[in-house]
Length: 460
Ligand code: ARG
Image 1 (tube, rainbow, N blue to C red):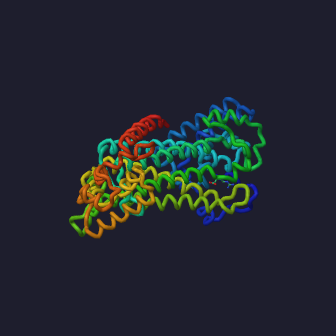
Image 2 (cartoon, rainbow, N blue to C red):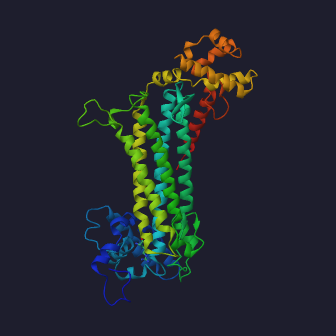
Image 3 (tube, helix red, strand yellow):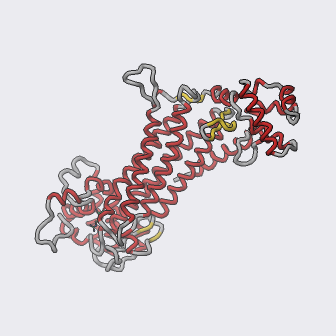
């Protein structure tokens, strides 16, 4: 069955049919297409195209079709151009001639926009729930080692000591913004397009607000050409997916390093790692590598749809059919990565002595010393110089911070008062960073409590 054909002398060639058909991938929209069509049948009744009885027949036939979709062989042998065509054919097969009225005043251009919006808003909810799962596991891991001190890095060089929970909370904040981004994407998606027709607005006076209420949309779209020509709501979703993947990828990268022999901070669970077919000793972080690898794929989905859209003349063009594969792929991959990351986090153990000694063996305390001098009155620029020379001397003589005594320090520079030697321990300096957002223990405890509270409020 075709939804067009009268104007043609011959049918489409086989190669064109195969080339242009989208059923293979857009069948995933079938429930959205059916629910949208049921709401549309009710709208057709309200404008007098369907009687109450016809509407009743159509709606219940659609319920049966929806129930059958999950059964065996539903799509078998279907040669329909797309999911919209298939749904109408199924309706005709089960409800008879009344099905011929269902597409009155409706275009597939608005229908596809509706279906994607219905699908996407559920997808946003599902992904937000998975994101909340990752965030919960991060907080659990922060609680488990709440006093652990690690060196924080810039340029992949040991920079300043931070608390382990402070590090995890940085990722919590990124994921919390991703959670909000999916909320924003959902809000822009949750606008009802039906009534737009092919591009000019339907020729039937539908009560569009009633359709929006019926399908639980927040509002109706304002311009029919915008509906058939635009997909920026889908780009919003793909952007949110991509940024989340970037955050996951960076966490994965950190933990690939932190669980290496060189770092030895983390032990990943056996259940999320794999061995080598040749080297018996290997325990490889494949789960994290795949998360990092899939980031490129999801980013590719965003790029793909952006490039598809960039040169399209108004309004609908068949190019836009290419929106679905990247949308589904990005959603699936992100869902898989979020679930995987939750399991990885759950399985991970911190070996706190390793990062603690990495901090102690390095000069992460240098800033603490310079700031202490500045607090005691030495202008910071000079303090920076003094500590810089102190570090240079230590590096030259192979001394780590704990090798110095207060007397030796004072001999090196009279500005180093006796109490300053305490700051040679990396776990001391963090106490000067108690301002909001800092890594002081009290500030971090408050941030952790705040994060738990916010996570509790993140209901979808
Ligand atoms: N399968 C099409 C798509 O995804 C549905 C819209 C078809 N519209 C058309 N004018 N051919 O874009």
